Image (cartoon, rainbow, N blue to C red; front, side, top):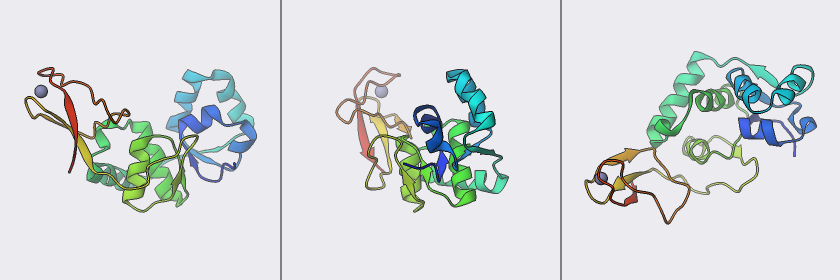
Length: 162
Ligand SMILES: [Zn+2]
């Protein structure tokens, strides 16, 4: 496994250091690393991936794509930075985040998983309450058989394709 790509924070935390050399990350990820693993954050200063700034254009592109698939509400600003950097550098995005994988597939941008196998088809979907029919765009549960209950009325939720 090699780091030639834009690495999400899971990759930064889980991969061996030498696999990260040659990879790219957004500046905003550094504070996440410092929170989770301060020792690793320090090592990144001497060896590790390149930390780069994200251009406003690429960020706008990332947000557009995330809105188009309905995934944007589940993404953090750091997630959007990581996606934008991958678009900016035209490098594969290395992520296990289902939403980021989905967006990449949608805009035909290469990605690969940190650990898991990812989605094989683009899915545009949302959760919908069976009771009050409230729709939760971009709220994708990881358990395909149990989507939880509606915060408003307590009915079960179901997954609907858009
Ligand atoms: Zn409801």
